[in-house]
Amino acid sequence: MELCITNSTRILNLNSLNRTGLPLSVSLKNSTVEFMNQNYFNSQKLSSFSRQIHLYLHQPQFHRSPVRIFASSSSSVALGPEKDRLPADIEVTESPEPNSTVRLSVEVPEAVCKDSYKRVLNELMKQVKIPGFRPGKIPESVLVGFVGEQNVKKATVESILKRTLPHAMTSVTGRALRDSVRIVTKFSEMEKNYSSLNSLSYDVLVDVAPEVKWNPENGYKNLKIVVEIDNDTAAQQAAEEELRRRHKSLGSLKIVTDRGLQVGDIAIVDISATTIDEDESNVQNIPDAETKGFHFDTEDGDKVLPGFLDSISGIQRGETKSFRLAFPESWRQEHLRGVQAQFTVECRELFYRDLPKLDDSLAGKLLPGCTTIEQVKETLLQKCREVEQTAKDQATDNAILDQLYKMVEIDIPQSLFEEQGRQLYGAQLLQMQAGMKLNEQQLAALSSPKAVKEFLENQTENITNVIKQNLAVGDIFKRENLQFSTEDLVKEVENSIAELKQQKQEYDEDRVREQVIDILEGAKVLEWLREHAEIQYITR
Image (cartoon, rainbow, N blue to C red; front, side):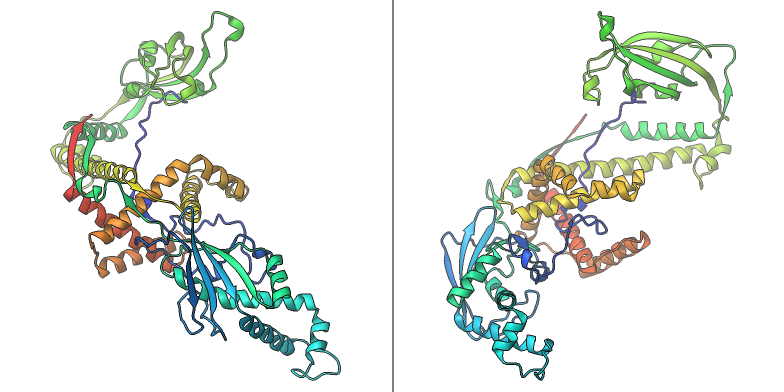
């Protein structure tokens, strides 16, 4: 039954400040490719190397023109696998690309290629068994002929890539984003290049931490925020409604026999509705407004279609009433806004509440631990005020975050956009799974690449704004030298892991730690911003 009015409130939890993934148990990547797979080398992600590359939200210094870098054969960088010592230096040219991407053009000298070729042959000699030859004593020509020259060539190119890529990545260490490294030169081109020149060249694209530009500079230090909050009586009204709800739960329902519907009753009704049109051939049913056996509590009359309660007031059991109503322009279903409708309501059952007297004898039943009605009222009011304060704080945080993303200019890398989008979509799937208990087939369909792609396209603006908020918060945390205690970090990590274990969800402890760090940083930044912002509260 879609006659109820609900207020949709946008709540931006601190979890939305995460840059590393909300749902730890939902994987939306549709495939995993081994590093040595030939088809992997064409705009694919090198997860075997980039898994260890972390996002540092500092302001990198971008080069506006190509910068030539010589990667030393003796240099060492913690970038996935330990780097192999090369017999000669490789040459790397770094060039800026759009969307906070860097192109690394790598030139591998002949000495490195020959050394890699020898390594491949030595490895093959250990593995290949050829009749008439002892292991390790097979002539090169015989070995190559047995394995196949083309296969040896492919293995050599793969070996060169595996050995040289960590050296080529030296210039972007500390800036490269997780899982954003991809070799864009086709494997066939690299094979051809190696065959003709006995050397190798290839291009790598890697996304780097984007620069956060504030407009105006340091604008976050002078925020002026206007926050809408409930009026002063909202908590009192909420407490009174909660007391009524608890009181009603202690009563019993009795059948009305001698009168019609009045406020306080509960009616079981069948509702149907059609559009109103002078041309009867155009009259249509309104499925969203039709229901059978609807339990209508007249005390909730302000939550249904305006005029509905007045129209059925006095209706008796077995009676049918027909009346016209218009859906207001503010109705949550857009296709019904302004629609003139003819309603037909049949009352199947009619009940009134037989409530016990509201006195101190009910206190313990209304709220365990209380001995008087006055104590119940005070306790409920205190709880409602706490909820109200939480809502006020949340509304303030939302207003601040909404200001932040409008004040920054960021060239967002595609890999970061896709990662954040998958996180949001994964969180949405988890909520759907919890609420609807999706089966495996439904979950597989919703997790398909097509479904994810549609989400990314439809939610581009929202995803972009979330990323801007995240990066702005991280930038403020560093600019203002904010800190949180190690004890808080350890405690929150332990609590998060315990909760994941309780829910029987898979998790990666390093990722959990990163998420907790993000949340703690976000909390510190929001606390700092609230202290330094000019905040004005106005009642609705």
